[in-house]
Image (cartoon, rainbow, N blue to C red):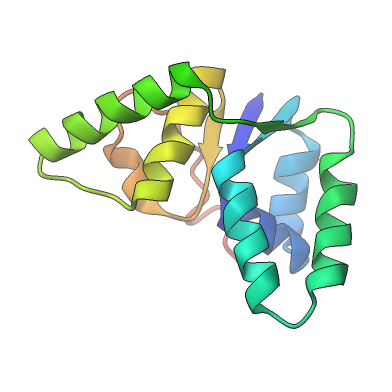
Length: 135
């Protein structure tokens, strides 16, 4: 299974959540959208462990089967379409999460997140993490 992770999944993994670790270990491929990388680095810069957190993240993304996905023209176009759909449906979600969803849709990954609002994105496959993996 291909998994596109949200920021909160990486954070749960780093906090030692064994169920998230199991989910990631069983994935065929793990995608990390560039937007998630930005959110993580913002947290690192605002926190007190910048060097340690940056080192840990670099080690994580260097593992086989883990790919950082940059924003490209196709993802940007999909983002624009999703913004329109969400607006038309009067179901806005955070802008960064629309980018993350567009990345997941374009790369065929199921989104792994604790945020339920991803279910508002048409066609986006989610992994039921809310109850299954949060503890």
